[in-house]
Amino acid sequence: MPENASQVTAGTPAVVGVPRAERDTRARVARLILENGPVAASALGERLGLTPAAVRRHLDALLADGMIEVEVKRTRPAATRGRGRPAKLFAITDRGRNTFVHAYDDLAANALKFLAEAAGPEAVAEFARRQLAGLENRYGPGLRALPPEQRVKALVEALSAEGYAASASKAPHVLGGIQLCQHHCPVAHVAARFPQLCEAETEAFARMLDTPVQRLATIAHGDGVCTTHVSPVKAGINEESGGISL
Image (cartoon, rainbow, N blue to C red; front, side):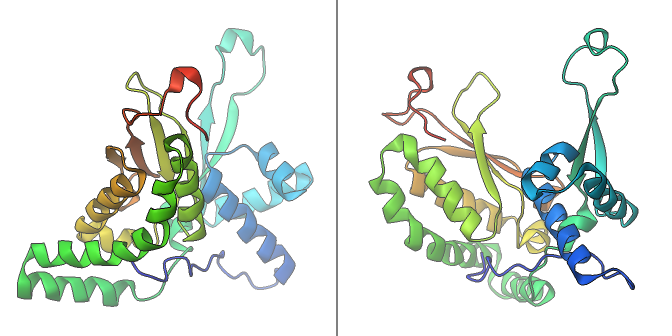
């Protein structure tokens, strides 16, 4: 992955006549949806200190621009909700995600294409591993020095600092473990053509956490979030006793 992956600029399409402060707030709304979505309007208002009317104004504008979309979620059976409407959640769209851009996508893709043609796919894989070595060298020793139950949280903080808008939660299936999510991928367009980037990242996570991991979904392949399952099998990680620290 690029060494400057954290240097990501975010924004919404410039609109003539919209004050700068309004555009900046709208960009903050979009980024919160990127990092935390799908999310309710009330949660956005609380995080940003905005009135319900102000939140609706920004959400309406982002919807009109195609930056976000509405997801409807029922949190309880319809019979118990009375006449209330299902909860509305807001999620980022591909167009919205693309506004959180980094430079040189085309240059990077063309360079990797040349490398693959000149030296073969394994050369691309080796390039990806070397790029991830920077991230691993910066954070790996510190992560491995921590107790196992603290490593995922530390990795989430490291990835967020690098621009990946990471989060973690207990895995929602019987296998247990942790679900590590990256809500933003600065190299998604390049990784869509060269999956070796995602594979090298997954390998690096396993080494830094010193436990098996499995990539379940990627933004590069059209999923909304990059999702990695972190195995609980490492000694010292015991979910039933509350041993995982998030």
